[in-house]
Length: 305
Image 1 (cartoon, helix red, strand yellow):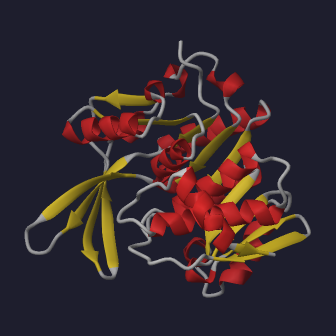
Image 2: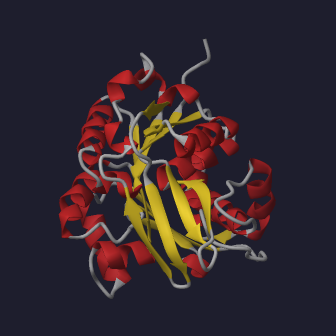
């Protein structure tokens, strides 16, 4: 039997419907937590996405893409429910809404995952809109608490979306308190805390869990890694940016890869890997997870201190 994965991302995999102008639309597989799982697999970590998708053409496309990414197929569940769709009706500026009342993702059942997976996994990642959609959010929070009690590392990227209003505040506090590693962008902070001061919002987030390791991304300005009283900063390497879709998910994966595979490296090295992975994702169109070769090629050009 195939060995169980050491990394799992639990949450949503969805279909993005993007306007192409007029009455033309294109569909793309996506989802923040699923993208992190794909990125970890591309970096060579045995990985899986734990979540539910529909059994129609949209769900089949996700299943096929999941298998093509090398993710453990035993962790993706297909149920006879409607698909979760993200309808992007304007690209500049981005405007979107979600369609997913009683959709497949909400019917994820952790009890159906392979036996013994909790004893094998080293890190489980949570985030995205899955934590803003009940009853899935409650299931995932319960799972995170169980795993934390077992000593499994928890990573968390809230990945702010418009549906995360005041009702999300309790979830933010809960998941921040549980997480060992938290990734957040300056734009996320403004939305999550309904603030105009990202640094002040970040201070509020850190107060929820001073012991966590934080990856604070700043777009073209680079990123910060904060652990206790130590802080490192890095600027992205010079690249030709194609687009930034999936860059945050790739940087999260880059950090987790470094923490899992190079546990004795210093904070600057972990940050360099995160920033290089995010930059590598920007060099290709769409949410294309970078390979380890691509990331390592950018490391000499990524400076952190």
